[in-house]
Image 1 (cartoon, rainbow, N blue to C red):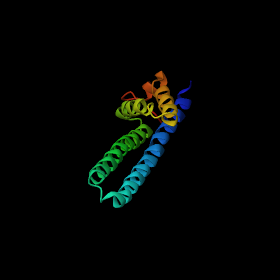
Image 2 (cartoon, rainbow, N blue to C red; image 1 turned 30 degrees about the horizontal axis):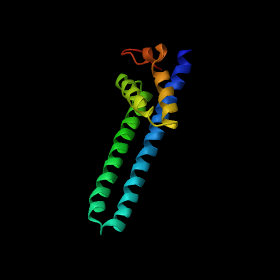
Image 3 (cartoon, one colour; image 1 turned 60 degrees about the horizontal axis):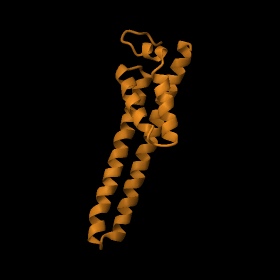
Length: 129
């Protein structure tokens, strides 16, 4: 593939990770608020009132963590930062566990970021303009 084509692929991968990261943050907020709302219905049950906040906070924090990594890595891909390529590869490998959409996004991202032309773009001193 030509270098210009790979730049478009890298930009698309960056946009995918930023976009899905924002959706993940919104999803984490929705989960947190729904479980907080549900807490009002179970506060008379001592076991449920202890477990529900823990589960809601834990799930929300995990989603926020991975979504934030995706956003940071996606933004870094736009400026061809070497650390961003590694970060997005790691996030993409984890995304492969999220069947089916995360798997497709993860496999595509890994394919793009492992191409020789892409690796060369992220080498220090390489001109990407």
